[in-house]
Image (tube, rainbow, N blue to C red; front, side, top):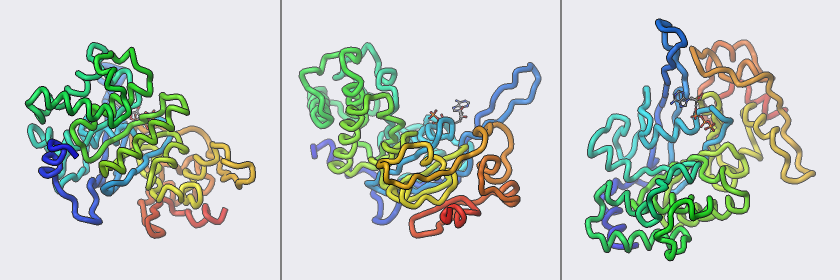
Length: 344
Ligand SMILES: Nc1ncnc2c1ncn2[C@@H]1O[C@H](COP(=O)(O)OP(=O)(O)OP(=O)(O)O)[C@@H](O)[C@H]1O
């Protein structure tokens, strides 16, 4: 660990053992949509509804769900790119949704985000060196130019970039290398938590594996905590310690990563698994088919969000929303009928 890293670690909030590093509490995010007509009432899109998740130091919490279920909105709320409508995000003992100015800047340094599109998240006018150096200037973490240069070289090596390519521009790198530049840019501030929003989805499968291995390696070396967002179950299973399965802005199931295949409890999780081919032809395939399409997140929602599509739906599900209950140690599910799902 360099001197700068050691100093940065020393001044960060310390997390007591067994305590979460990040606590998302009853988080909701609405977007107001303007109606088509001049005086029509704006409609409300519920992108996130009452999401509560604890993230523990050094773990990877995978977030999975179909397009539009609120994964990116959750990640963006955590890094404060979106202002939550209600709820809390507790980091370092404080609710960061209420912060602004310098205290918010300090938290942003600790919680970094990496996006799916490695190209659009880089400035095409900046060389790799300038891209990686920039956060140190924005956050004023290092005033000495030669130390900044040293730091750039250090993180480039750490993420497997050739330091000879320091003065190259984004278009002169491959997709995988560009994503490594984004990782280096995030790492240069010595974050504690990284929100990874589909960071390998745009890459070829062989490159995906390399970049996922890099994430793992960095986690082991630096004790990083990841909130890892993906729509791809195999990626989530590979990288995560625990997995949260989301549907229509809510967490439906939360469990250790190996349980998602071995012992899913929610009909929606089973339906997600039905959609992918089994790893071996001898594996028993989970078969649950949902009816119809995902409903619109616009307007008031009553009951279980899956009620209209679920083969296990009963009258109660249409009126009452099941909360996310711990039904086995470390395994939470939001379903009144999970016993029947298991028996299926
Ligand atoms: N800025 C915005 N304004 C209005 N609606 C938005 C905005 N951002 C997201 N949404 C809506 O919020 C819901 C959740 O979107 P979000 O991007 O978080 O989903 P996602 O699970 O990440 O999907 P994808 O995998 O396709 O990115 C969607 O219905 C989306 O259309």
